[in-house]
Image (tube, rainbow, N blue to C red; front, side, top):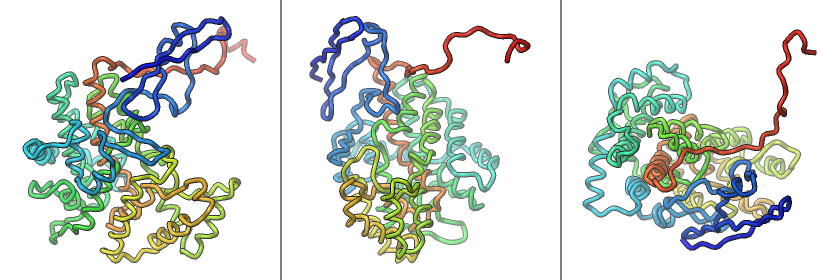
Length: 432
């Protein structure tokens, strides 16, 4: 990395210091402000960390202005078109696309780690049938460390690799079991003859009383959803995983913390919000009224699934899922009023000058929610699907942080204190 400096002057003392400007491979450079407190006695304030780089990473790059998303340097559209989720998971974890021999060995380990310990099944019995599947995911994934403590030495590279393989392999099994518990059906064990996505669909939808066949169009769409959700730089849940991991917590606990952060409606629950919004809108004929409400800044109604915190252009993931969405609806010949409303909403919003001028395009949550609903996945499982896919990014980011000994330290954000100043204790009898 190249390095320049920027001069900062403290007007109180007149003292000037040089702060290093650190440049990455691509994207905006950052100012290293580590010496500010030592030299000036001040911290920086950046609420929400929206302009602060919390770490150095080689995994994912986003240019929100241009609508670019790269995994290890590879454009997301190329990976979605030519690769598949398990290979992308390898890329994120190891940094390079695998050779045939590397992939064969890696796939063997993932396939043969897909079952979970039988004792974990008892955890599910402790949850009410109407418990949210994400609540189950938080508990069960966190409990993995009690069953697989033979691979939780974070300083051992082999242990880190085994933990990563176990999480990638077992997450579909844990997720499908969460669904089966909620509908009162028997758990379906993994089938080592099936591929990663086929296996998940089989565990979700097959029952002992009848055979189940995976629709290739559905499989392809879900595979793309997994790829597109695998990682997304330092978002809320990934930052949570890194912060938890910085304390040297075990990897299963760290991923459980990521699931907790993802559960929030402002993060992973956005595609659920899309379906709720479509239900509120009702029939396609009412869409113009709701579009006008969305334009009214005094109206609390918002069009969910449009625009993005990072992307100020068309979300590149949405472009990919838009094609898959229409293929799935055509293939399954689904007749659902909400889906009809969604397609009409997409059409009208993309033509509306207001949305075009503000670059409020349909995002990945808009299309993923429609696809998941069309293939029969209930709304309360949407965020679980997200967590399943994002586990790959979380564990890759965690492993990168642990291995980076030169920069690995416990996270410790500072604050601007705005509470009471120093005061003396007053006995209760003297208080007024």
